[in-house]
Length: 211
Image 1 (cartoon, helix red, strand yellow):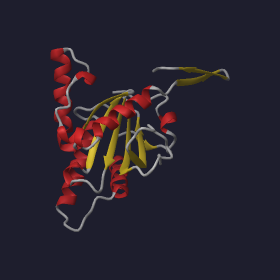
Image 2: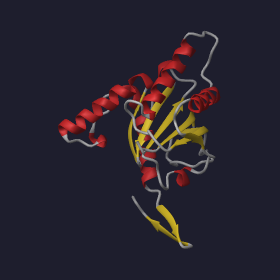
Image 3: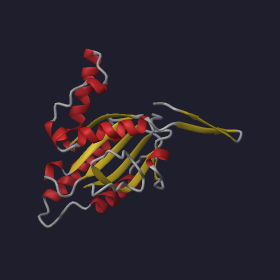
Image 4: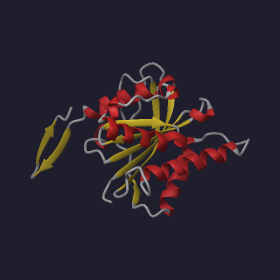
């Protein structure tokens, strides 16, 4: 299907003073993010079945299992990014690495789905890798890789049966709230929504505020 997807790998560290990533982001964030790779694919960016979301879940679960089974191993975000690139290159996904640019430019015209892999090397192991998903400019959920698909299925069920939007569905997940991901999701969503849509036609540039 012609559903685009974007995958971003980043490392989260506690912010010192008022430092902010060179790619930008919410100034109110409590964390500093170090970005490692950005991969775009034109098709199959959706979650279920053969979609990008399921592929990322499988990759991350296998990566975590490898760490658990190797006592001398440690979480290296650069290694995770390198293995992810290799996984994309040997898969059937029509994917390509794109040069890093400011988040404002990256999300001027967002893909259908964006997946953000966030590592926190000094946290508890089970919470050291989290997967977030945005649909357009709306953050949908954040979860451990092994819980991601179950939460997504639950949210979709709530939307269908109770006519709720994703924003109205309770996380029901203390670790996401306690580890600061929920607040960071809200800040990131606000930041992305405030990015104006800019386009150029016949040499004339127009800007539309979508917030």
